[in-house]
Each structure stands twice: as C-alpha cells, then as structure tokens.
Length: 258
Image (cartoon, rainbow, N blue to C red; front, side, top):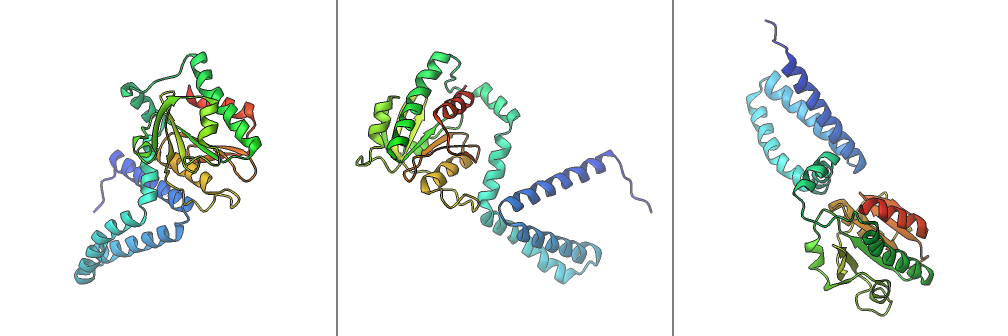
C-alpha cells in the first residue's frame, strides 16, 4: 500500500525542518546544544517505542514524561523562548505593522532630532573625559513604563547639565539607569534586567550587562559610559558597539531614532 504524498506534505516537512533548524540555532547560541540533541534522541526513541514497536506500557510511560517534559522545558528555557518571541515580534514586517497602530512620537524634523541627540552626546563626552559612569536608555516603540516605575520620576526636558548632575558620583541616582522617552527624561535610578550572556567580554561590567539586558527585552537604545576607562558603548538589538567617538555616537543615534 502506497502513501499519498502531495504538496501539503512537502510544505509540512519543510516547515518542520525550518522549525528544527531555528531551534538548533537558538540552542547553539545559548550554549544548550547538548540539551537540544538529548531532546531529539528522546523524541526519536519515544516515536519508535509508541508508534513503530507499539509497546503499550513503555509507550504510555513515555507519553506521560513528554506531557510533563513540555512544561519543564518551558521553565528551563524561558529566557530563550522569550528571546525567540521577541525576535519574531521585532521582525521588520512586524515592526511596520505595529507602527500603523503606534501612537508614539516620531522624530522626522532634523532640528527636533538634534535637540534630543546633542545634549546626550555632549553629556556622554563630558562624563567620558571625567570617567563618570552612566547608563542611559532611550525608549523607542516598546514602552518602558515598568522600568520607569523602579526609579525616581523626573519628567524633565533633556539637557546636558541635568544628565551630568544625575550621574555625578555623589548623586543618589548615579548608580541606576536614566530613561528617556518622548523627548523627555522620564526617570533616573531605574533598575534594568541584567543579561546572563556568557559571551560578554569580562572587562565589561554590570552597566554593560544591564544595557544588553534591556535591549534583549525591548527595542530601546542603551548608552554606557564606563567608570573604569571612560569609554562609550551603545547596545542595540542585543549587540554592542564599543569605544565610540562623539561623531560615531551621534551618527548611530541619528540613524536609529528617525
């Protein structure tokens, strides 16, 4: 007896192959490849026992393990699953669809854009020379209200002097993050989620890990001024650009904030 094999079956196989390939890449990036291979071996063994050999007792035990195992995997890989769903929502086509319903402010006017960017750039350069540590997060499409709630609300116009005063070493708010949204400094002293990525260079400190953490969970821009050497870094889409000069920082912010 021959099996019917049509276009639908080809599409089914291709989709499953793509899904397995993407999961493979995700596990490889998170250093969980051995776990992924172990899961594949278990699934193949379960299919052989329950579908091919039709062992009822062992098959029923494995069925129960699979049903419980799905919940265990969700708990075990919750950070990776969250990253996968975020990357899916952050796809360019999804972003274009979200902009249709977004009520957030857009900066198309070059003068408005310059008024927002230049105080940030000048403050970062000044703090860099003085080796004053700073962490500035610029909100884009993804709201950061939950992060703002962890700090002290300010809601002030963006100015170089205010930014430097907040991150002054004796200031009570200098250790946390500053949140900038809708062309205003919304809050300071905010607590950010910390990235546990093992690939982050050891010379980068907690501010850099926090900057990477917030870009894991949102489309925001995170600027870090190192307290150790005064270098300026920018984290965007879970990636760092390190040791930036003023012109490069201004160029990145201009390109990303339009």
